[in-house]
Length: 308
Image 1 (cartoon, rainbow, N blue to C red):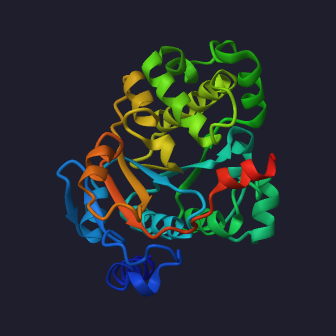
Image 2: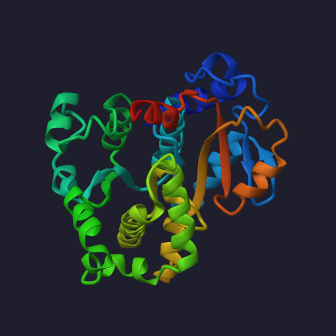
């Protein structure tokens, strides 16, 4: 156990000291923010080691990632290694697993092969490449943490899309969806409209707002139900935002769980002066850890081209 912690800490130091050599993502590696951690509450840079030390004192940690950036998954493993070694059997909730996989998480073992794990979990390889998430699942199992699901099932998604909030009113886990303000709903619709490359009428995307809210509500309910000493959620950055996502649902639930939010963020090559970025992110997270960019692919341009 101690050896594993030492290896992780050495990896962290190497990443911080030799970012230009160690990062997997190839773009913007020379950006001045690459590898830097900022405490968004003070707007000041802190050492990664200081962040890791501070995390041990919080009972709920939310980690927001960009799904296709491999460096984000490496940093998640470093954070997990630190927290798992410092806590008594913490619980780790993954957005990448949904409620239909709950039973499977109780029977898989660290000794299972990758093929056995994927088969038992009915892993969604297309949505969540195993090369990114397999090491995280194995780390959780190997270090005797508790693996929990953090997403609604596909059948629930279809039900919400078809019936809207009517599909949620009988389940107390989703009560915060019904309490969400029109301001938040409008903000989420704006984001979803942009994510869909502004190619669909906004009104046709309205069902997606309920689905997004339901996912966040489900994660909040999962966190609220955990009895272990520490809970860690790994999810996309939009799901962990303090102003619109899981932390907001926890507040509406009047939960006694008060999460600390770490946002893993690709640098923006157009922004060398980061003060505006940090001020904007202050509403979203407590800490931001900057990484290089993995790709400059314009998915919207690709989509629009394919539609011609």
